[in-house]
Image 1 (cartoon, helix red, strand yellow):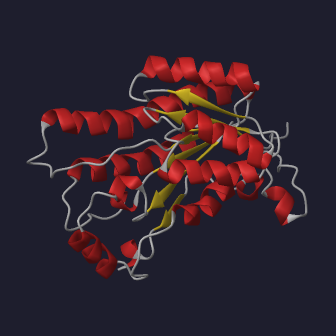
Image 2 (cartoon, helix red, strand yellow; image 1 turned 60 degrees about the vertical axis):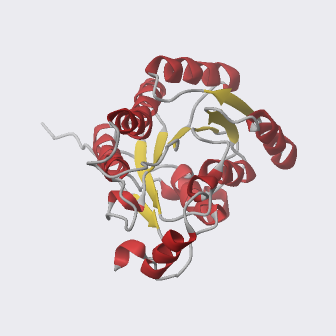
Length: 269
């Protein structure tokens, strides 16, 4: 009696690398999609042909941004308000996206907030807020998306982690944020193994990015950041689009459990 092979079939892929990066007809949820990194990622995936569900918490521009994606790239885009730290909202809004778009192919768990103090001086309510949004909220998005992916037999989850999950930033103290992002990187690896039969899971770890989240930082602090970054600058958020498109598209069908660091060399030192 012969043994049965456990080998899975290879995916059907085009020869053209440009076609592998196409996202035509795929539906993508991007949490924190109305600003900073999230919106530029949305633009990159929409340009590649993806339909976009922009999730936001408090943006007054989200509907306008979604309409702009539709008009500029000829895709379907909608904005959805969702507090990711509330599991019931994540479940309800995900269900709404599937009803509106007919499917979900990629979940990008990108929403996050920074810590404002070190581990000893952080107020407990601020610690819990960062954990609830940056870690638990990301897990809630993963959990709901994973249920959809398992049912339909395919899917793709991308977390926004951070170089702060690899190194302790200075001079700012942010033990809670660092710990959450380190947890996200390992959560992605863990889910990549657990979900291997039906979905891929990866993360992106940005470094210092020129977005409003760092806009209130003192000039002297930013100068110290630059001195510790080999490329001696922060990033334009558009410099992250390629990493997310790679992971979201069929160009990365053998990539799972990976973390792509885009930090100007900060963690190489």
